Amino acid sequence: MDGMRAWSLCSLSPFLLFLALQVTWASVSVKVAPRVEVVKGQTAYLPCDVTGSDVLTAGWFFEVADKRTRVAFWSDKSSGVDETPMLGRVSMAANKTLIISSVQFEDEHNYTCQASAGAAGTAEGRTDLRIFYEPEEPEAVGSKNIISVFSRTYSEVGRCTARNGYPQPRIVWYKDSTPLPDVRNPTSGMYMIPSVVKESSGLYTVNSVLYMMPKKEDKDSKFHCIVVYSMPKEQGKQKSSGSFTLNLNYPMEHMTFSLVNTAPLKEGDEVKLKCETDGNPQPDFEFYKPGTPDRQSGPDGIFTLANVTRNDSGTYKCQFLDIDTIEDHSRSLTLSVNYLDPVVITPSKNITVKQGEGVNLQCKTSASAEYTLQWKTGSSELSNNGNLALSSVKYSNAGLYSCIAKVPSVPGLQKKADITLIVSGKPEIEEPVFGHVGKVGEEVTIMCSAHGYPAPQFTWTPSGRESVSVQDNKVISSVTLETTAAILKDGVTCEASNQHGSDTKVFLVNVKATEESANRGIPVFKSESQTQTGSSGVVIAVVVCVLILLIVVGMLYCLQKKGKLPCGEKKKKEVVSGEVNNDKVVVEMRPGEKASEDSELLNKPHAGQ
Ligand SMILES: *[C@@H]1O[C@H](CO)[C@@H](O)[C@H](O)[C@H]1NC(C)=O
Ligand SMILES: *[C@@H]1O[C@H](CO)[C@@H](O)[C@H](O)[C@H]1NC(C)=O
Ligand SMILES: *[C@@H]1O[C@H](CO)[C@@H](O)[C@H](O)[C@H]1NC(C)=O
Ligand SMILES: *[C@@H]1O[C@H](CO)[C@@H](O)[C@H](O)[C@H]1NC(C)=O
Ligand SMILES: *[C@@H]1O[C@H](CO)[C@@H](O)[C@H](O)[C@H]1NC(C)=O
Image (cartoon, rainbow, N blue to C red; front, side, top):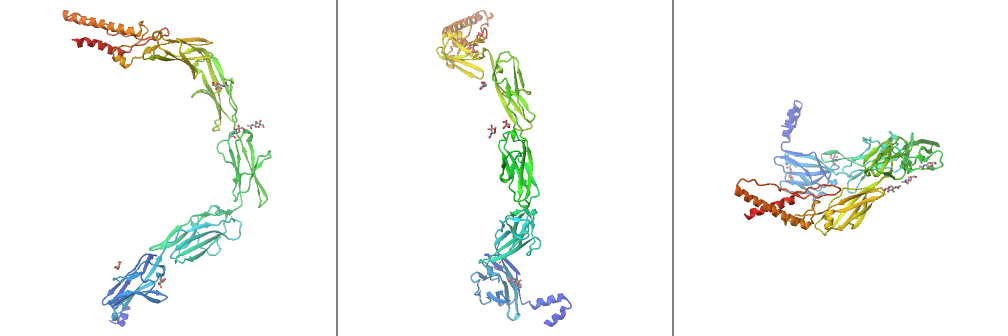
């Protein structure tokens, strides 16, 4: 078929036209990627799919200003690369792919792959090679200058810089979260002046200066910028800068004078008063209390009163002169400092009350607000009305009493006074405890503890080394002496006396059985009813036991002889129980000792049989 036939067919049917073209170029065809994107420094692959029979040559060219320069070639006889700036980094694979390693910005061209089949014709395809490089995070810097909202000219408010991107990135300014339109001429109250620097590395650094005529509403606005750039297969990527606010001057509309403290004020508090306007900057304020000569200026509009008293209550003023309008502005504030006077107890001194008598204690105070009075001793509450009446006092009532005053409406406002109640009377000795010794002749220490006021004097019979100590409202006397037979028998007597009378108690001394002596079968005990000394008691006990043994053996014998005679089962227990009489204490014999002794004695005959 020839061209004329094809043209006439074309008007009849596009389908036929397609067929015609297929046939015309059937001998050689080239397929390339229209665009290849790669990051600088990486390897670019530019594929070229050549089809057709009898392809003789193929080559890759790049174009600069319509001028083609060959980079690499292939023919059925030879192949190679040409003398270009890419020499050394470029190669052409057997499948006709052009491979450029360590890609540079200078490599960014349109590349043409051309294939020829001699007389059968030629074919070519073009690839646009694009290089990318990611810019650094942008930096936004606010102007240090103070900008007045009254200014009629534009002021530079900030600069944004994004470094080292390729291709050239774009800067977008934001006010809070709103992007600002990219305005270049001053129309809508703001505009930007962009600039760009091409670094020697081939990278672009872009800059944008933002100009504004700010209004008061912009005082808290946060400004920042973003850089918008592309990467292979990714467009519209962004990086954001930090933000800044404007250094704005604007006039005040309102002035406030307030108390910084939140809790109700009380004496001793540190009080802070704050003066503020809604303008910027804050003026220099002056504080004073009308009627007093002092005038003070406080840094940052804060005025501090350290350790206030009720006398600091009253009205305070804060004032300043507006230098623009030559106008005086002032506000006042009234403070009220709560107080609580010291608590006074009647009687005022520590009080001594005779045992059995009554006493009335009163406590008083005054305060700026309603208060409570509470009597306490230890952790127990005794009264809630300031009066404390104690009737028929005992020694146990002696001690420290506190009256606590509180102003419930003012947290932390409380005061307290103490009084010590002394109960006087004749001494009372506490129940005695036994003294214990291992054996006669050892030293024993006995403690005698007595209530009583004035402090009792102690007399010990027999006497020994004595010492006295005071514990709470008790006096404790202790004596250390050597135990004698007489002491084991009669005990030691403690007598406590003062001007109101005296008290006497006998302290018995106990010989403590050690494990060793128990095993030896020697019963060691002491009782009031026994009249023997310790050692003779042991002899008697052994004799009694032998007698019992003889009786038991005799009975067993008589039972065997007569066969029916009942034998007595008395005398099984011999317990001396302790009792207290006449202020004397009697020791109870320990059942354990007795039992072991009994069994040991009873076992003997069985062992003998
Ligand atoms: C062509 O050959 C190169 C190197 O041998 C290989 O990396 C590439 O994937 C091939 N391309 C195609 C389209 O076959
Ligand atoms: C390749 O050619 C196209 C179309 O003429 C042009 O738009 C593009 O910028 C060129 N690419 C390069 C890298 O010069
Ligand atoms: C506060 O003032 C009172 C009475 O003037 C004084 O007793 C107290 O020590 C002062 N406290 C301090 C912390 O300055
Ligand atoms: C308050 O002022 C009065 C009279 O000037 C004075 O007597 C009193 O001591 C002052 N009170 C305190 C807590 O400073
Ligand atoms: C009251 O008694 C306590 C404790 O006994 C003592 O510390 C205090 O000094 C006494 N106060 C007076 C005023 O006698």
